Image (tube, rainbow, N blue to C red; front, side):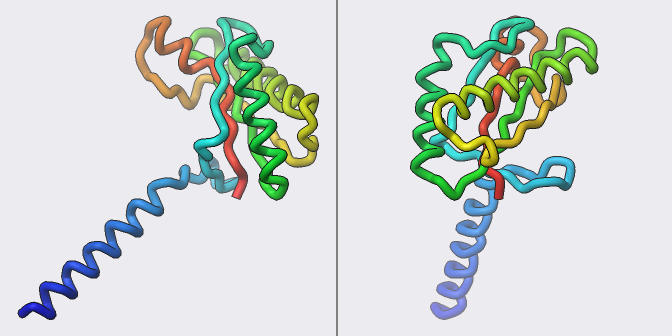
Length: 148
C-alpha cells in the first residue's frame, strides 16, 4: 500500500514539474521560429502613432543590450506591436517601424545586427484586450524574445 502511494506521489510530482517547465516556453508563432520570453529582456512602450524610442525606454534598452552582450550566443526577435486603432495595413507598417527602431537602438549600443531579427504583429497580439487608453498604451510596444 505504501509503495503504491509513494509511486503515485512520485509520478504526480514529476508530472507537475514537467508541466511547470513546459509552461515557461512561449508558443510557436506561425510555425516558424520557437521563442522564449526571458525575464532579463524587458518590453518597451511607444506613444500613440510613434515609433521613436522614448526617454523612459532608454534604461530598458541599455539593460537589454547589456544582457545580450553577456549572452553572446543568444539571438533575439524584436516584435513590434500596435493598439487596435488604425487599419490593419497601417498597424503592420507601424509595428515594423517600431521593431526596426528597437533593433537599430540595440545595434547602436553594440549588439551585432546579425543577432537581431524583427517581426511586426500590428494589432494582432494585444496584451490587454480592453478598448480604452490604458489598454492601448500597453499594446503599443516592442517585445524582445530569444530565438530557440
